[in-house]
Length: 77
Image (cartoon, helix red, strand yellow):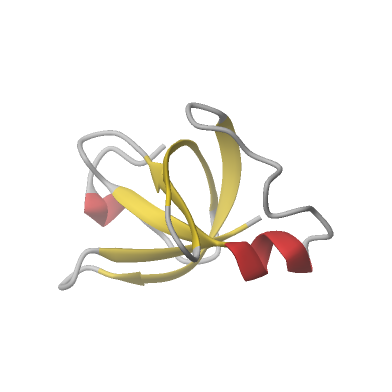
């Protein structure tokens, strides 16, 4: 569970929820205003349609990238 940015570990799976649709993917939010981007290309590489998710839906995501200084998280399925 991600409660703080220091909890984010590259290579781990976490549950979050879809909070917005961007031009290149979905914003997935966790607790305490921590969020990452699940890009459409990652969804399609997993064999799913990029429109497979809806706002508010819970998703299990894999952390592919994290940078504590910029507070950026890259996600996959």
